[in-house]
Image (tube, rainbow, N blue to C red; front, side, top):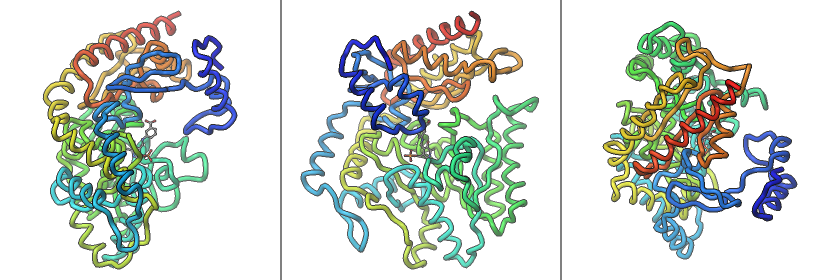
Length: 457
Ligand code: PXG
């Protein structure tokens, strides 16, 4: 554990971690040896740790914080709701005002024809709900054999059994015999990593055509839905070539297969539009949401359902599915306030017109760095590919975990930037200012320089 602590409490908290806390996605032995960094407060786009260090949060918590940390209005909304009605369920023919108002508000901002919302506690639960609802839909339509869901390798759809199965993370499948039956995967549209000699446009078509191949392999009469993130987040901010989504849309229409957009990261403004599907002009049948819905202040997720799907399940009797906290009133009140702030302060419009173009321009300046093979991004999402050879896109892989080296420098220099393999990624709070973007890029360059020094040394 860290020995140069300025604050004795840091040590105590790290000991509690070692003794009692099982953290998500962690190597427990390594975690107890190093001790976690203890984050104690936040304001705007900044975090502070228990040692008093100020950190620019380039990852918005974990792709969550849209309106910034420290928004009193959200605190007020939660406490007001807690005083009035802290909890009641939405089962058994009951409801409460916040959940109903939130459903209506989401229908207003969602793409046309998406007017119904099933609430959950998280994005993973949203995708579990999707799996069950999609199969229920086809059963209601008299096609119960349409069960297979096609997803993508290196996509992320959560960590419940269905979420991890839908996701295409091999290291998650390896633990616990996943995926569950009825879920199959196709390659991702990751040109920089997997495009080989094809142009991005050719590769986009190739990757989309893998969907058609898989549909034919499984049998179109067996395939219920295709699920994808508009831009893969946890997989490394993977932005499909422009040819990809139009071709996917054609294929889905040809075979009568439901289109599910996992908007857990892209939703609520991250691309400079309300949803990633708006950014690409996609018209999904279902959309999973979470994270930016409440800016992460309280847990909440959901599944937005189109009229087309609703009209079928509306005639289908009981949908035997739900969670105690489906539509939790406090979460709903916070989500409503979060959406009010996004709308009234025109945060998404500002991202689109001003701050995202500025972030993207500044980030691309890093492309001249000797370690950087590509810089890409959309809206408030960015990725920096670290390479050994800029021309051939050759990786350090195997020789050196260069992403982790860079991440370590970020950690030590007051910047949260994540490493996904050798890809450094950012997704700052949507309210980040130009000055804060300058600070982010300056820190990122410093960390790239420090990484290059380690790599060469
Ligand atoms: N879909 C997508 C696209 C996600 O990014 C989920 C579903 C699951 O949401 P919940 O609320 O159940 O976690 C996510 C979550 C990472 C990382 O390493 C990303 C997520 C979760 C944990 C880690 O970037 N995204």
